[in-house]
Length: 215
Image (cartoon, rainbow, N blue to C red; front, side):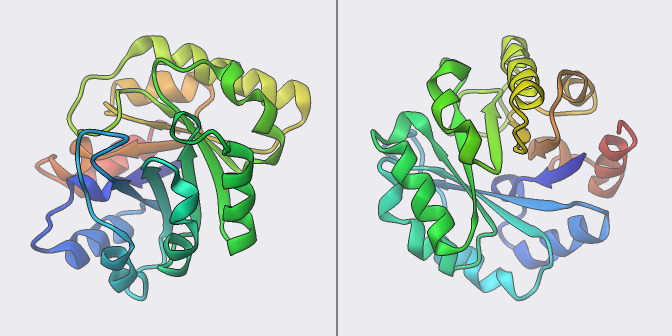
């Protein structure tokens, strides 16, 4: 099991310090949300911001692209330091090509589905991805409540992985805390994205340890 604190909830006045803190606390990934204000009704940072942090951290940079036609930006996202790039099946009519471009650029490739999207929508590409991200809230904003029905998709993905011999990791993002995380892990999740729960906690180090103790 891997813990991926979400940079979107970090202290933007002290980003380097925040990242160093979660890394020392035992986090495995840094989840980085890129939003364009089109695919989701919000705008966040771009590759230039996390490029400056790349040399200061050994964490896996897990870049979640919430942008329309993500294939336009794959090269610059990977060059900035992304280790894993995940793209939404809802954001492009060319999901297979987008995943190919990510791998050709030298990063691991992942596909993302929204709460309203079925696992069937991505079955055709499951054999070529390294990661599948199940959104457990609607994308675009932090601090939302976990949607329990999304756990069915985690179970489906875990079942398909076993039956087909796939090797992707299953990631969940949205409303993850010490209570919902246990349900996610029981359903088959491997990576827990936690933003508000970690960075909004009175003791972020303890928050990460609490999640790790669930493994």
